[in-house]
Structures are given as C-alpha cells and as structure tokens.
Image (cartoon, rainbow, N blue to C red):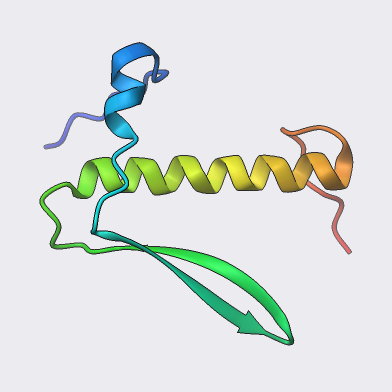
Amino acid sequence: MTKVVVTKLEGKTARKIGAKGTAVTIRRVGKDGEMTSVRTIDSASKSFGKDFTWVFGANVTKAREENKRITGAPDSAPPKG
C-alpha cells in the first residue's frame, strides 16, 4: 500500500521538485485553428514522481492564470455556457 502525503512545497523541497527533465515534453496541438500546449511525461522515467509534480504544478499555474483572466479571481471556476 502506498502512503500519500500532502504538504505545501516550500524552501529546498520546492527547488528540488523543479526538475524539468528529458522525460517531460511539450507539444503544440491545434484544434479548430486554436493552438494549445500539452505536456507529456515518459511513464518509464526514473524521475517520474518529480516530473509528474512539475507538470501538475505547471498545469495548476496555467489554470489559475486563465481563471484570473476570465473571472478576476484565481481560485474560482469560469461560468458554464
């Protein structure tokens, strides 16, 4: 059984996690004339945990920036429809 620990990344730990290695690739994907960046991770990577944490953090940052642009608040969801 795996033990899941949820903590805020601060100090040295946060700097160590910023490992954007070769297992992370960023691809540009287009749909209906709109380009989007998609981050992918190699599942066989030795540093999968660090890479996954980095990609997740980058995605959260991007979502908060978009929410702030749309609603004016970083932690609220945009209205449906």
